[in-house]
Image (cartoon, rainbow, N blue to C red; front, side, top):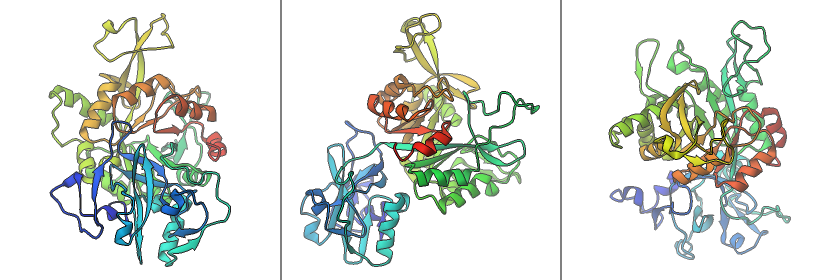
Length: 460
């Protein structure tokens, strides 16, 4: 069995590294997706339908557990374009997916060989069914007689991502908390620190519940600094290990992905820290404030890349799809674009003095400090460095339950080719419907509406 790059390595070659030949077990060459009409990398849940399923058949045979009413998790920039009859002529059973107007190979099967472009281990129950069928040698099985309503709906779905803000409470326990414009303490508590940390549950249990309710991905944002903890014993590593035992969708970890000096004086690079997280079960790492610093230096050098930033080193080692940049902007109102050198938009929500324009100022340190950098500058810089996805927060919307900042999302989507995750402001299922209907965002994330999200994930 070959998964993702395991399939790709068996081809003859790839545009990604044209001078390096593949093993040539499968005839064909990988091509990069066309990003003129869609985001690249291709990240999310898509189909893997065989020829009989593509031609409208929703009953019959299933190859290694593949079903037309199931979606599987893909994350890649390069794919093998599907040419009808070509691979079949080599003896392969072919399952395909469609991304925009491109049809590509999602899986190949021949004898006791199974190759998948998608990740079955991250595809929930549908992926576990594929793994079980392969490991038990059940190449062909009968499909259910009654297909799901979702049968044969090809194409990428938009993701609903559950986010867990994790930090230590005043007793030293790691808990899931909830922010209100980035303040995670209760307003009316008597704790001398200014209010007790909101405690919404244990991270591993919450992640499992989100997965069981149908979350497409789970994100852990570590908002605690473990300054006196040895790197190899970071509490988040254990959370990832335990979560990976019961949660079979992609896991993202954010916080602390930077160059670090351990308690014994050992230096660890951001790449070293990311490697520990990946080895413990993470699929992606999220970089925040350090991305702002990297962008500032990028522009100061005249848009020159050095290859030494956390984004660049991790992307080079693990691929762009493994690097998410978390952006924390806030609105700055101006009366006209001439008042600032930054990129502005005309807003439907005027400022306190009737200002018709605004720009989005980047912040660091959890929104506590602002920088002379706008959101368009930041996202274009990190895209150039090799980031594969933008987690787009909004300080003005955080904890308000008033819906996403649609103007911000539209503006950022126009600025980059990589996928964008809308975040901050969700308080009702209608807010997810709204952001998917009114913007081209690739995914939407919910964090503060924890208990509500658990109830409503199936319908979302």
